[in-house]
Length: 325
Image 1: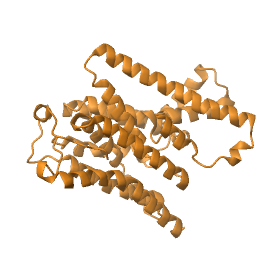
Image 2 (image 1 turned 90 degrees about the vertical axis):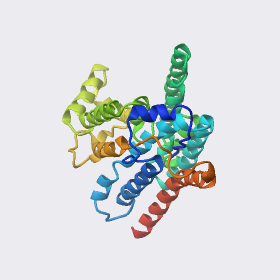
Image 3 (image 1 turned 60 degrees about the vertical axis):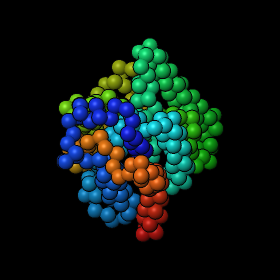
Image 4 (image 1 turned 90 degrees about the horizontal axis):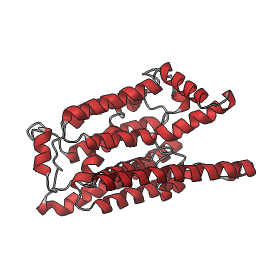
C-alpha cells in the first residue's frame, strides 16, 4: 500500500548494495500482492465467525511487508509530497470507516508517519534534519496531550458525555490532526518502519533490525518480564495500584502493547510471528514490478488498487461477518 516505487536516481546503486539477484528476487508489486493475500487471511480470521485460528497466524507477515515497502516508496516515488497526501487522505477516510464499523485496524496513519519521518530524515543538512525531527516529536507530544487531556477533562466534568460519544470518535480526530499516537500497533511499528527504511541498503542490517524489534515485542507481550517491567516502571513513577490501569493504557496508546495481552504465551498472542515476513523482505530486489514508460496506465491502476483494496475488503468482510452472526 502506498509503494509508489519509481525509477529515481540512485536505483542502480541501491540495488547493487542490496546484492539482489533479479533471477531469484521479488519485486514490489509481487510483495504487495502477497501482503494483500496474508492480510485477507488475517481479516477473514478476525471478522468472520467460526473462522479457523490458523488464519490469524498466516496473516502475521502482512503488516511488516507493507511497513517495509513504504520506506522504499519514500526513496523512489516521483512526488514525495503526493505520496504523503495520499496516505494522509486515506487514513482520514479509513478512520471514519473504522469508527462506523467499530474497528481498531487502520494501517494508513502508520504508513503515513513512517513515510513522513523518513522524509524528514532525508534532509541532507544535519542541523535541519535534527530540527525537523525535534519539531515533529514536539508536535506529537503536544497533540497527544491536547487531545487526550481535553477528552479526560471533558469526561471528568461531564460524566454523562461518555454514553453520548460514538464508539471510536477519536480516530477521525487523530487522523485529521496528524497525531501518531493511539493507532493500530502504536509508535512501536512506526519506529520499526523507520528502522527498515534506514537499513534499506543492507540485507544484514535489515535482518538484525527486524529480529531486534521482534525480540522486544516478544519480551513485552509474550513474557511476564515485560509485565513486570511495566509494573516496576509505574511504581518508579509513583503510580499507585489504582493508577496502574491508566499507566498500562498509556503504554498501549504509545507503543501498541495491549495491557490485557501482556504475559500471554506465544500461541495466545502470535503477533511475534510477523518475523515470518523476513525471508520475503530479503528477496526484494529493488524493482517496481509490472509497468514502465509504456505501461503507465496499468501502473497507475495497480497503485490505486492497493489504496482502495484495504478499506473495501475490510468493509466487505465486516458486513459478511455481521450477517453470519
